[in-house]
Length: 309
Ligand code: UT7
Image (cartoon, rainbow, N blue to C red; front, side, top):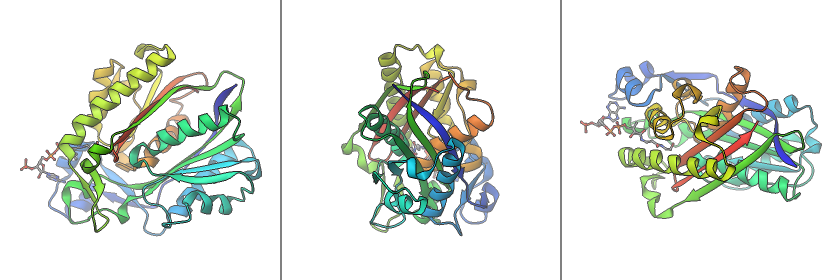
C-alpha cells in the first residue's frame, strides 16, 4: 500500500506588504530585496490567528478530498508560531474541525516542519497507526520578526498550507524520505530572549545549499531515481539564490523547480504546502509525477521527501 495526497488547501492573509512598503519602514530598497532574495511582497496576518489560518487551509484540503472530518484520525501541525504555548495547535485544530478520534500534535522543526510532518504521516499510515492524516504548515512569523532589523524583517511572511493523506494502492506513494538535525548549529537561526528571529544569513546560506543537495541525493539514491527523472522540485522558499544553486548542484533544470517566493517570502513550515497547492492548481504537478520536496531551517533541521504523486 502507498501513501497518497488526496487533498490540499491554503490560506493566505489578506494584508500584502510590498518591498516598497518596507522602504518606508527600514533602511532598505526594493532592488536589494529583489536581487538578494527574489522576494517582492509577503502576506501579513493582521486579522487572522494561527488557528484560523490552519482551519481555513485544512477545510479546503478536506473539502477537496471529499471526506468528512470524522474520517481523519491524526492531525499534525508544523509551526514555530503556535496559537498557544499549550495545548498544541494540532489539538485546537482537531476540535475546530470536528475530528473526534485519533490524536493530534505539533512539530517544532522550523522551516523543515512540513518535511518532518510528511515523513511522520507516511510512517503512521504505513504502520497502520492511522488511516487518514491531516498535515498542516502554518506560520505567523510577523509576530516574531523584529520590524526594526532590516536583515531579517524583509524575509518572512505569514500563511498556511494543508495536505490530507491516506493509504492507496493506485501507484501514488512516498518513495523515500529522510530527516536530519544538528543541534550544534542552533545559533545560526533562532529566537532571541525577546522572541525575535536572529539569523547568521551568510553562513546559513552555505549550509542550506550543501545540506539540501546531500539529502536530496540520498533520497533519490534510496528510491533508485536519477535527478533527471524528477518532474518537479518543490523546495522550501527561503531565498531564490539558494534554489538556483541547488538546481545547479543537483543538475536538475531550474524550470522544474516551483518557485513562488516573490509573492509570499519565507513562510517557514507553510512554504512547501502553499507551493504544492499552487503547483497543483497551476497544472505544474499531475498524477504520476515524481515530486521532490526539500527544506532546511532552524535547529538546524533539514530533510527531503520524494513522492510519486
Ligand atoms: O528559512 C530557513 C533558511 N533560511 C536561509 O537559508 C536564509 C539564508 N540566507 C540568506 O538568504 C541570505 O544570507 C540573506 C538574504 C539573509 C542575506 O543576503 P546576503 O547576500 O548573504 O547579504 P549579507 O547578509 O551578506 O549582507 C550584505 C550587505 C550588508 O552590508 P555590508 O556589510 O556589505 O555593508 C548588510 O548590512 O547587505 C546589507 N543588508 C541590507 N541592505 C539593504 C542586509 N539586509 C539589508 C536590507 N536592505 N534589507
